[in-house]
Image 1 (cartoon, rainbow, N blue to C red):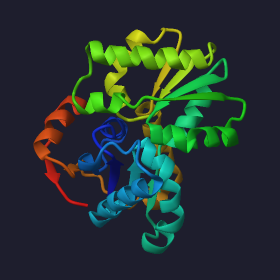
Image 2 (image 1 turned 180 degrees about the vertical axis):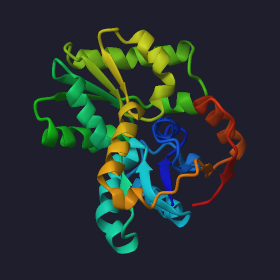
Image 3 (image 1 turned 90 degrees about the horizontal axis):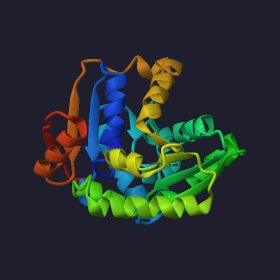
Length: 270
């Protein structure tokens, strides 16, 4: 019984890396739907179908608990899967997203109570972060900016250079124009931490930049403590397996850049 991590591509490796560092003894299975990335500009129906197929695959490979590491999929598909699929088809198993722990951290970190979010078009248009903040921290004002060029840059391995800096500068300038009091910026796409060095260099130092893996991992550890009925079923051999829906050569090369060690993946079809 393993912990599954699902993402639309490579970005979820930033979440996987944080989980494995915080909870290293557990067994993990990672699935990147690289053949169909990005999810950010797709319809609700398509994102739900893709995410459901990923969840079904991970459960079929023995996962007891799945983390949807993709913000777009968490925003558009998680609730429907939790409410309509798990009770009838996968009782005793669970699927978690990364929006709630992100919102909790935003509320905790901001001093001006004015925060910003960078994400895909799908994440921004879903308004999931705004809705969650309205419920749990209504005093926080959230300004959102879609950054459609950042995922293609990461997927292409262009983590630095003039083109990358151009778009980061542009997105920050447009974000700052929304409200000068923004003191916290959430990178609400799991690809964006790969650009953290350039974002940190170009965004003013007084702005706190949040990377989701830093608090999603502690949140999962807390969840497992509160749910011993799930935790007790999870095996702890320290194994890791990686699957992709695209070429394994490309996945393995970029995954090594993400994780800092070699990866051997297996190609599957959803």
